[in-house]
Length: 300
Image (spheres, rainbow, N blue to C red):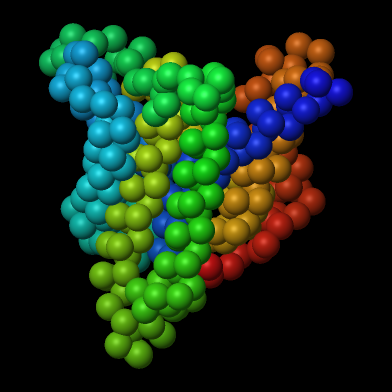
């Protein structure tokens, strides 16, 4: 019974983190129809920024400052990627797909050079502390950090849902996600909305990168593709939930989080299947329900 309770708690915390990881990916696809394969690199940028700001090899400021800096840098990278490259080719989906791959690897290799050759830090094991690294009120630091991830995840998801559904800019995002030409006819600047979307997605990715690296005990320039492989994870979650659906991504994150945790906890040698379980679910959904749980929805 204790084992089941512990697995449920672990799955709940991991799922909250997975939801944050995937939302940026689904935002960009929902609005611009772009499968952004640089998303994992955006997450890595968040972790490396936190390392620069908060570790003894960098500015040695509190990790809370590192979390804020990682989020802001993710937003800057997201906006810069769209304004510097994607907006010029966004009508050519194959070119965009290839470019996001290239940009992602370019960012990752740049981070490796930054860590190894400039900061003299092992790029395969950069130090990033959990946001909460001291126990309080008789509760352990790990549990408090997991609670922070869970609460901040739902606060951000709630804020995003409110922003998209109840603000003028949010309703413009929905309009562009349905048809940018139609949105332009009613006076909505689709270009501006795409910039906002990429900025938001980058911010979510940067935030997720700091939390993920802190929870894993550190980051790596390969963390986009190393287990739990946030890039693959994001892809699996948005396919399972329904491409472009924010609520679908949240539901998908919890399904994958629970499935993965229960596989690791209760299947013999389950720890060997940690990175594969999400791919197994992805295969099943692609065969049985390729449109995902919520289908192809507007970004709402």
